[in-house]
Image (cartoon, rainbow, N blue to C red):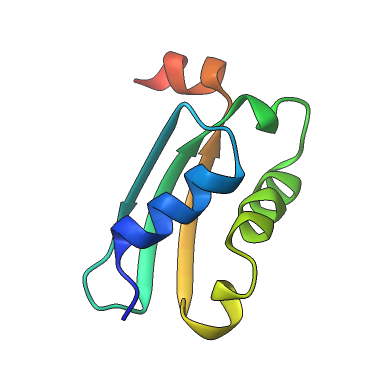
Length: 80
């Protein structure tokens, strides 16, 4: 069964991030907060596509649902 830590590792291994927080304890439904400079100048859908690309086939096979909030470092600094 996939864990929140597994998802965090997969994202960090494929996408340069300043912060990745993943929660979820049922093995299928997860919530993530991801902060990356790679998101600059991209619409939210494009940011999410970068994360989906980082997760690859795991989104089709192991992860049933991933709710995510994506931020640039500047956006994150403004709200945290």
